[in-house]
Length: 144
Image (cartoon, rainbow, N blue to C red; front, side):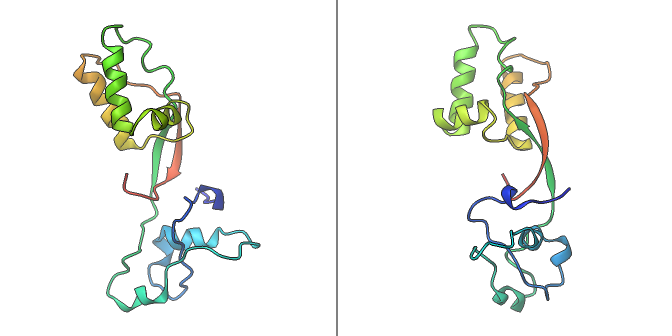
C-alpha cells in the first residue's frame, strides 16, 4: 500500500535518518519519503534517537481496516433502545461534534472502536453484525 503525504496526520513527526537500521520497517521513515518536493519544514525525529539501544520514536508499518460512516446502523434498532444507544455512542466518541464527524465519515472508526460499537449492540440484544457505510485500509499512525 502506498503512503501519501496527505495521509500523514498533522503534527506527526517524520524521520529522515538514513543510518537507522530499522528504517525499512518504520512508518515514520516511510512518511519522510512521502513528503512533497516543495515542503520546507516539518516536525522530525532527531539523530539523538540513534544513541540508545532502541528508537523511542519507532513506529512499525501496520495497516488497519477502518470503518467510514455509520448512517445505517440504527435502522433495525427498536425505538425504545435508540436514544440510549445513541447517547452511549456519543459519549464514547467524545461528544456531539465528534459523533457527527464519525457518523458522516469525516473521521474513520478504528477496529477497536468498531468492536466497542458491536459490543454496545450486543448489550442491547442485537446479534446481527454491525455493518458500517464503507471500509478502507489505512496506515496505523496511533495506537487508538
